[in-house]
Image (cartoon, rainbow, N blue to C red; front, side, top):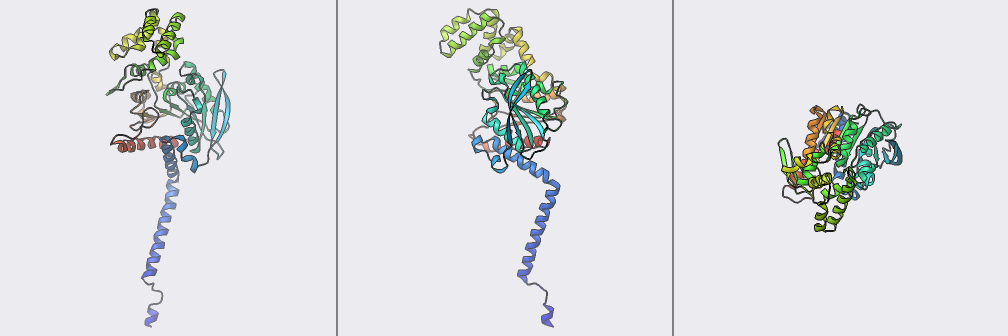
Length: 398
């Protein structure tokens, strides 16, 4: 009988074994329940993390493509503004219909073929977007014109017509491509279709950007600062925009001045300045100026055609017309467009419930800062978390 009393009573090892199995069952149950309840969020977070990681790595060291199959890439010729634009379409390999996203490059001679832009397009397609990346010839020639806005509108309409495009859509602009993109997104032909707008390192007021690039000073609201400007910019800007100068004689003279400065023939260049006409001299004085206190006066002296150009390509005036949700990012160390421009864009939208803005201390313009300072890890962590939040938000807008 005593032996019978011990039948079916496990020893210590058996109890431990049962407890271990029970823990596994409970753990797996939690995973299953979590997957059912939060599976979409987990996948979205994982994809966001992969895109974030690749955004701060050289394209040749990207990791997302090693985990998720690359998208189908198709070269296209799309009609826009009475002409044909070259473009690449990145489609998820899963097939079906997907949320269309137009990706607008900045002032960059490589256009749609920029390595970092190609990687971004591929990763967005891996995350489920149908991504169209056209070549905008004006910006490839390092200049912006109102015709770029028409090209962007036409590109979005072409993307929206594709059979594998879901209704609605989004636009994403990089750097100086943001200005024309924002103007296009507010156009009556597309603004009711554009659900989400992404701006990375963009601008709202071109005049404020020129103040920064010529003098190094920026300010908006309580934010102000100084960064030493790139001396070459003023002459590159003039060279690429000589057609905005009304007088052909002044255009030829300004071109000669730039060429002599490039050859360090400064005395000869200064001699030619004296031969400029009234409008040509006004343009030269404006671009040569480094004193922020003289900026407004010199700006008002510019030919009307140049001032109208600044206004027409400044989207801050029309942003309230857009009905989209805005995702805005900007590096606080930006040497090309001050981060205050993204604050300006965010405020100009009006309804702040439609705005997600983040300043990124680990970015300069559109590239990450190389670690140097003692607090670089803290800065990277803060900026990384903010950028992750923006990407996570975007992926949820599909």
